[in-house]
Length: 146
Image 1 (cartoon, rainbow, N blue to C red):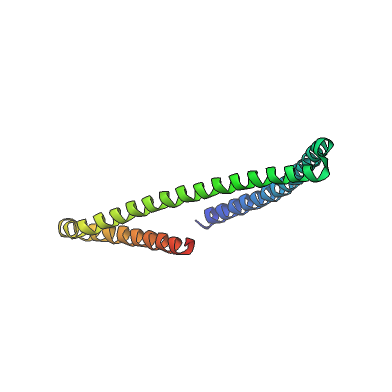
Image 2: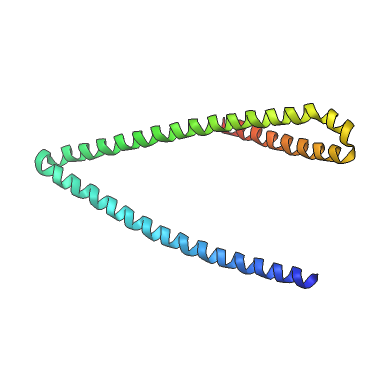
């Protein structure tokens, strides 16, 4: 039995080590890609500014690029607010379903206890404990988000 446990522990350790190496490699590569994208973005903004500056002057070009960036930022913030709203709505619906399930379990508990004995009592207790823990966690998350 101990040999099996040591083999499992060894495999878990190797999997974790490989996972850490992959994660570290991916982080480094994503950082490099991010820097290259940032360089491309800055080059694009400079070239657009230079192109617009040929027709409207340097100040006009700077204002056009700044206004475009501001519009894009406002659109992104609006999208994020919509996503946040839908996520909260989905969570409220999920919380309502959990509350309904908890109520159903608690309503059926006396009947199950009388008919099935100790096993049903243990199952109802476990379900109630799980549901109440999930409900408490969701209530705490709701309070933290507000």
